[in-house]
Amino acid sequence: MNAAGPGGGWPVSAGVELAGRVVLREERDGYALLVDPDVPRSFVLNPVGLFICRGLDGTRSALQIAAAVRDAFNGAPDEAGEQVQAFVDVLVERGLAGWAAARKET
Figure 1 (cartoon, rainbow, N blue to C red):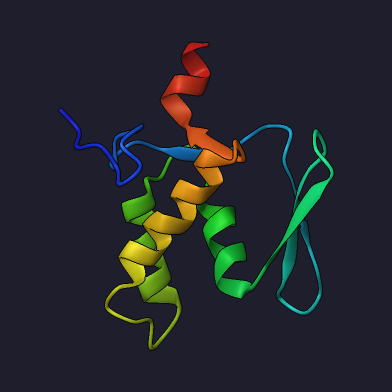
Figure 2: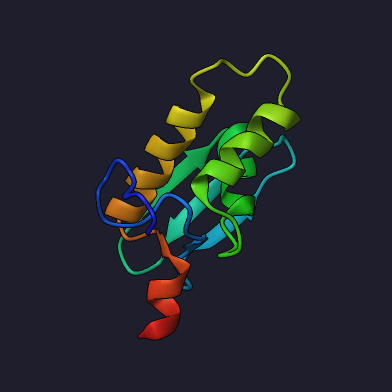
């Protein structure tokens, strides 16, 4: 059995993916916009946030993405895993991402 993530709603070892309606618009400067066309809001992502969102393809867990962040960004703090998990939790809470298995079952 998988342990529940900090938000309690999904297993930390489960694949996480961006919601199908969400648009990830990458800019030339390494930043990006995460746009939810269903509501009038968008989020500016720094290069680390963009890296995380690129990893939300349904095949990797937040823990795996956190490990990739530590590998890709030299000098990532020890608490990078917790920060990635918190960021993913916010995306899930706002309906911008979700547990891939749950989406495929519906």
